[in-house]
Length: 270
Length: 249
Image (cartoon, rainbow over all chains, first blue to last red):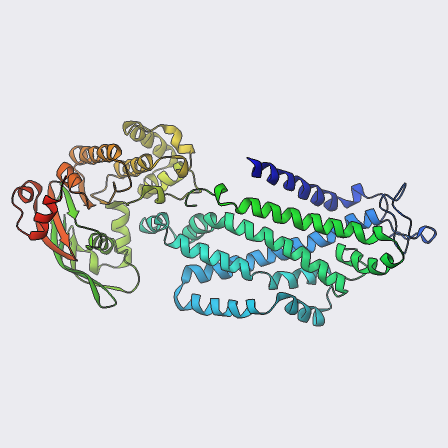
């Protein structure tokens, strides 16, 4: 039962982060882009809970707003990669034969290219904002999902209950959705969670490198990028808090995924 | 009812079943017995048009005068849907693990006949009670039930559908002795009450002795002996049948 408590704890942590950032407007004390040149580099304390940055903007409010951006980019991209991955893997696994071989070799070729390089290349000519970031991460992040879906479909295609359904003349779409996709959900869910953590990380890395979300929009990665110089002059709070948020978010997602992956939680033969 | 004539099945030019001929008479329990790999399950798969890709079949299988080997997919689908009911080896895997029993039982029984859910519920409830199952299983998932209970659920569907031919492919091999006995008793009742023609595939001679009227002995892809159970048990002619009978406890 210990793992259950751990799972619950991390779900609460992640839930808090998501709620705080999703309703950033309710919790933030200042407008995220309001500059106050009289109060630059104010350390954490009264009025400014987590201090202010080099333009006198409230770090706490920007942290929430930035979280919204980061999590939205990650969420949209994961949804996109989920759709592509399920379609690709589903077709490959269900049809099988030559189609499967060709599709898998193509996928393996793509997997050998580090996705960060692909993303950099896309970003170079798309020069994108927030949504194109989501698009780029999405269309490079479906590979693992596709593989998992394929292997689940191959396994389930041989399952007795699927054969049984085929025998009784169940329509193909019903078998695909009701029998195969439905029973792949646990595996797909876990891989999607890990993808989500990965997407957060990629958004942060790109923004940190200065090629991600445009500077005008706050995101955790952006904040870290600008905090680099501030740390040199001793303004540790500007970089520390986004760093902690990224750390906790990715950690909680990974712990949740890990807990759900535990085979003891899975239904027999599911 | 079912007349199989010179049925051969081969995968990649390797013969799995060779020139098998046998008869499943109407209203009786016929058993195919043979060791693992003797081609029993393959024969059944061929009858149901359920063979893996890359297999070739020759010969005939006449079901009520219609050749199952030579029918279009639609015809076979029709026959499967209305005339034949199949129970597989492992009932625990015959149900979708993430769907509640009610919907699945409906899909296997009432849904096939075109009954409404309401009709199904009324009819199935009484069948379940008859088989010693509680109606509560409607709202349970397959993994919450035992293997024996699931196998009885399968039988319940067979009772509901009243198929002309019931095929049971090693239905008892995943059950313990007590549940096996219960299962066989239910099969016999089904046969006596409704006159369901049953094709029982097994490797267990005790089950044949207990339940079947006719038996077909398969060995290494060939039908080596057929006849009534009483006759074959008393006077086996083929050496394999003799060995089989000697190996009984």
